Length: 261
Image (cartoon, rainbow, N blue to C red):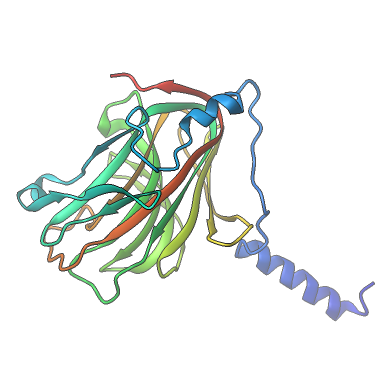
């Protein structure tokens, strides 16, 4: 029993702060999908990145037209049981890894990643992405739900959840300040809502970043590394940006189908 109203107020305040800052996130997060893909079939899509799985992923790059004259695709390699992406110096540089499969209905996916920001650098950016991209529409009509772990020249460092619509609309969710990241990112869609969780290396608890309104349509999976934001027109990339990815997993999915060619 509480000794007095002050004790009760202290407990209430502590609980409220935990909820506000997601400090009391559950140790595990799971969804139940009636009629979803059996676990033994989902294991086919698990990737430890010990070696290339060309049936699961395709590698490309991203840049804007004004950046093409000074663009170099980032290096992608398998190193120490992880996938390593390293941007090239002296140019706009990126690499994008996109799934050859698409997810239909509700889903729960996650990936381990690591990036250590280079400090005191303002002539290039450092952005790691994990996202799902709407399929079956023209590029301009599609949208994506995206985790961005970034160090930008104009806004410091942080982890952000957002909905990106190709019409130019950008719905930014919560921002948490971080100085690099080593842990797991998780995207869970239920109906027309997508929830973003992250867990730092060594922690047993998930922290909720945001829940945002999203499409119900089919999506592909993407992860990437860029040394530039989309609006940057000049770059002086004096050092490479490096990120590692590991242990991609589909925890649950309504359906997984091959992407249409």
